[in-house]
Amino acid sequence: MKQKKKKQTNKIYGQILRKYDQKSIRDRILALFKDNLNKIITREQIIQVSKDPITEKVPENWHQRLSELRTDFGYTILSWRNRGYLRIEEYVMPDLVKRKIYGKRIKPSDKTWLKI
Image (cartoon, rainbow, N blue to C red):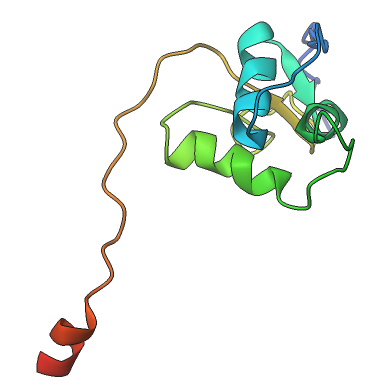
């Protein structure tokens, strides 16, 4: 039986290069990725920069802010699902090119629901 050869890749990990004191969690995460384009960012690094700069409290919803960068703002942030060389909890932003984002769902008004 033939063994599959593992593809060797030279992983380059990003670093927390400065203090991230932007007002929003999303902006702090985005700044981290911008400082480390095409480098691997780990979950721990994202959590570290997500902390409130004053209270040092770790937000519960940091992963939702990461998702918003992808869906609401069009940034390409890849994970192990997109790139086989990444492990779970590793992410890469290859560039700053934003994809076209589509409109959000519009919830029908109460008046519309009454007509339905």
